[in-house]
Length: 239
Image (cartoon, rainbow, N blue to C red):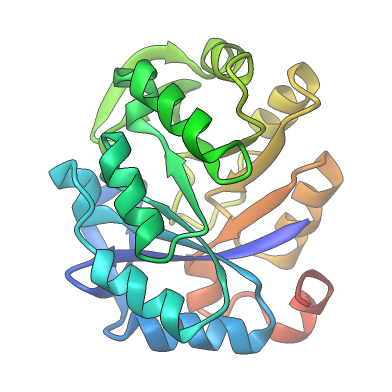
């Protein structure tokens, strides 16, 4: 299973939110490039980069930071936040992203989402499903849709997605354990999905639980920044 550190960007700083609330930000670094380099030096191979300002403004904001990180490291960077059309997706790839995660647009503009998927392929385009009470949340979790996670996945798996990143908003940044039951339900119904779990990881045991469930990857943020995951315990998941 891939263990993937997250860098959430606001005003060119690494921050973390609690439950997706923009008023609860904690700043962990004013140098995201240095943070990404440290992750690479630890042995991480992938990075999940979230443009929180972009999610709010509905257009990518941190493209220069993306380029700086992609130039300074060899990390496989998955970028999300603010992508609303095919041209923006091309800009993100042009600035060094290895993959993009499409969330809000998959709810509000399925035609463009499908166009981006066909243009770049399922290895480079990840379906993002931010979930509140098993319903999809959009716009940086500020809005809740009427689409439940299972019908959402059924529709998009049929269109050719293979990777899906599921974030339980109630868990994100809370370090109270991941939504193992939700992920288990999803993998029972869609065993072919490469599921990337996001939100709630607090201990190394949480990571082993996600591996046992059959997750393809797991995103870690606050627990990593706050030293809850000792390096020696993570070695199995690093290169």
